[in-house]
Length: 334
Image (cartoon, rainbow, N blue to C red; front, side, top):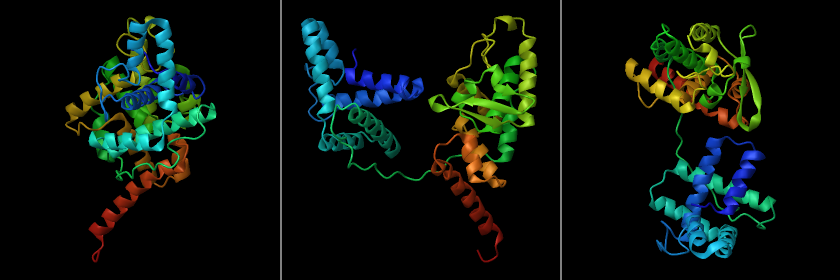
């Protein structure tokens, strides 16, 4: 199956010029392919399943197989034009289609953001004069406050992994570092040995867009990391482990984000805690507890690596809600 060549150009731009993560680029690609299918009539109004012009990206494959190189060139040109000739009404039709398919407001907003970025790229490249999304508003989303754990729940979770072996010690160290620093799970698994400054009690974090930031790490988390590294050094196959990566799997290779999620799910089950808790919940908990205990918003913004302070402000709603609850419960005339 061959992608629309314009999608490939855009993904290369994200990868090599914007330095987006592979996961983010993959999400952009999926959104654009779905839009291409809609434009071609597959899954949307006028579905002509099986026709030569059916898919915004699959039809190119058919053209190459049946018609040879000349037909493939024409098909590639047609696929580019299919995206470049989009007008606002076509985008509105796509939004209506997403609504019919019961996509959530947040998912619809994400797909619109993908299209905005794509057509902004097209404008900059001189492929279109203006974006067909210029006057299309993003659907208003329901306000959902991020979930967080209270301090007692954090303690309960941290005590679940055993420190009596390398993997258990590693898992406790990972959870402690996530909560102690508020870093993303993708940033956690990207940590190298030399990113840890145990004396200065800091971590150098590789953030989005090849940026770096330095965050403090607490003594409790550092103690857990030391225990893990001690077990790791004494492992019979330690010499064959990836010597750069801080957190490795049982085979000694860099741990993946998916593996961290699986390990967390395991400990949530063992502790009898909410299975919907994710590694990101620890990041939310970090930010909420920092603000609860007097940290200023700008500092938390820097620690989290947020570009805009408005992203961090969502946590002030959490602390305000907690204050209001305390008021309602304590004030005699609340």
